Image 1: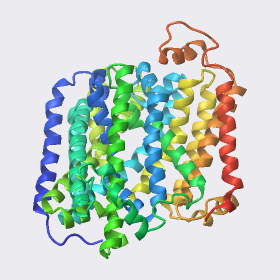
Image 2 (image 1 turned 120 degrees about the vertical axis):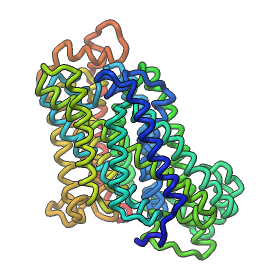
Image 3 (image 1 turned 180 degrees about the vertical axis):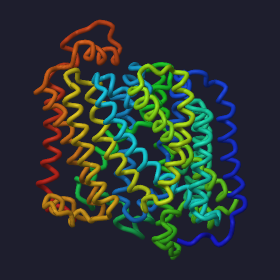
Image 4 (image 1 turned 90 degrees about the horizontal axis):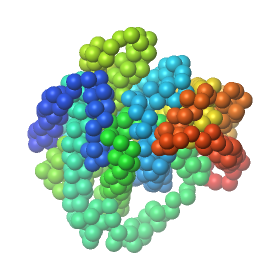
Length: 552
């Protein structure tokens, strides 16, 4: 990959403005931080509008600008599955988790799991899972900031990683959750504006009649695209298990991603949690369909105009198209939007990592430490975590979307399953949740270690199951279709075979659902766990029986 050949002054100026405003917002927000609750959950005072926009900025990481467009061009079918599953995941988050987590009044995912299952051991396990998931997610996004600085601004990649990382570390350390929230609100507005408007200009240039509304603006060009690329809209060209696996990883991964869950602990009440998710789903869908329109425009442009964009540059198609068709002014906006997208996601992850260190680890080990001391230690913890993440990101994963998808899969097995079962089935106990978390995490981490880190092709792994069923491009994605269901089965079976949770633990389930009375039979039946086991077995059976009926 080569940079543009010169420093893009206008883009650099707008990027610096975004960075400076982010720091200023946190300096302003610091005056609201007086207690530990203020620092970690913004005093539980955030409204649905602000929280919804903050969630959007977490969801629309730098992968929105870099990576997904390449997936659309090179593997449209997988990209469609990712978009659909990602949007469905937020609906699942709204229905299965959002209001119930808010009623629980925890600070973090790790605290929820520890309190719901009455287990310090599960708190430690969930902190480990959280750190692995967060580091994978962080590495991809900081690398993306470095790429933007290098490719578009002519600045070495390491400069982008260090500058972006230090700015985020500074404003997270200074402003806590208030600073993170208001920054994410600002950054959401920036990234939505800076993506949709330049893409609208691109669509107008290629002749799309509905260019003024990018998500659907390319509709009139569909017949011409079908003629130029006949298979473009034919989605079923990979094994259907790939779609199932992406759905499972995305659906339960979103519920398990700790920096998403933390946002529900910041709102005023369960109603605000639900409506913030509604706003998030709408805006994420709007932006994702705009990115899809960008991929459409790139393929259409290359096929009808005879323009050759090297495959190595597919990650940067948004910027290439905007510069070629809209001009440097619009390109500068797109650059600023991409920087905002990277900063917002990194901020949320740093926040949860710092909270995990002080609130969930140190606070559990030193239970007699008061909140004032924890608050002081939190500032130092955020700073240390930020510096360590910058160091890690100097040698990040090569393919950003791959790192993000691995983090989704690990979060689904290690955190998503115990959260969902803890909300909806009283009988889930610490033994079932613990064994499920450990097995699910170790299996998914093992697969990432061999495939994602060591770069092995699944068929090369010395275990026949891998060679037989995880074949083909992105074959590793199919691991989610096995590990997720298996984690559910283990959690349920072990919970059934071990003593039920104490009455005060089971009562939390009813309190999360808003009941004021106690009914031992409520959320304690056999229908839900049996249904989950049956569905899990069917998915794994499907994974291992129809492998030879579809393209490999």
